[in-house]
Length: 300
Image 1 (cartoon, helix red, strand yellow):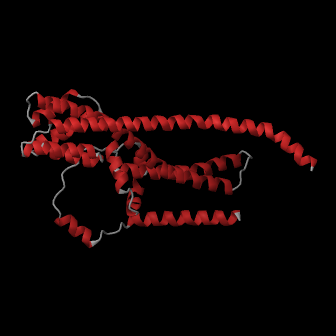
Image 2 (image 1 turned 90 degrees about the horizontal axis):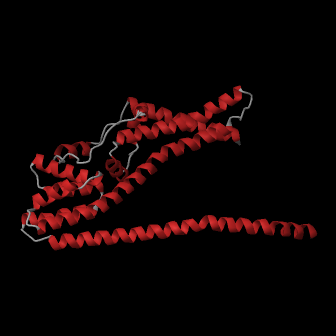
Image 3 (image 1 turned 180 degrees about the vertical axis):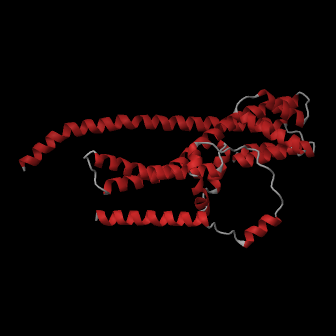
C-alpha cells in the first residue's frame, strides 16, 4: 500500500513538473475575444495603491509565475487583498511556488541526512511529509495576505471615521469641498491617511475630481464607506448640495458599526478563553473516572 501511495505521489509530482515546464516554455495564447476586448475597451486609470516586487522568495520562484497564472491564480478577491497590502501578484505567486518547493524538498533532504547517519525513516514518511508541507507552503501565503488585508481595512475604517469628522468640521468653517478634503487629510498620520493623500494628489496631478479618485481608492481597497463618501462629496461639488449633516451621520454610523464589531470580537475572545478551562475540567474528570472504569471492567 505504501509503495502504491509513493508511486502515485511521484507520478503526480512528475506530471505537474512537466506541465509547468511546458507552460513556461510555450505559454498559452490568449483567446481572441480577450484580445479584442483589451483593444476596444477604454484605458483604465492607473491604480492608486502602489505595489512592489521584493524578497528572495520572489526571485527564486519567478519561473513558476506563468504556470500559476495559467491556472487562473490569484483570484479576484485575493488580487484586491494583494493591492491593499502593497504586494504584486507576481511576487505573491513566486513566493507560493518557492514555499511549496521548499516544503516538498526539505523532508527528503532531512530523510537523506538521517539515512546517512544510520537513522533511516524509510521512503514513505518523507514523501508524505513533503506533500503535506508543500500544500501548507502553497496555502499559507494566501491566509497571511487575507489576514493582513483585513487588519489594514479595519484600520482604514477607523481612520476614515476621524477623516469624516475633520471634513465636515472644515466645511462648517466655511471652506470649500476641495480645500476641506485636502486640509483634513494633511492633519492625519498613518497608512490610511497616506492612501487618501495619495488619491487626492493623483486627482490634482491628473486634473480629475477628488471624489472620482476617492471612489477609485474605495474600489481598490474594497471599502464601501469610502465610495459612499465620494458619492456624497460629488453631490456637493457638482450640484452644490450641503453634505455636512450627511457626513456627520456617516461618521456616527461608522463609529457605531466599529463599536459593535469590537464588542463582538471581545465576546468571541471571552468565549475562546473558556475553552482551556473546559479542556482542563474534562481532563480532570477523565483522570478521576479512569481508575473506577478500569476496576469495573476488570470485575466483569
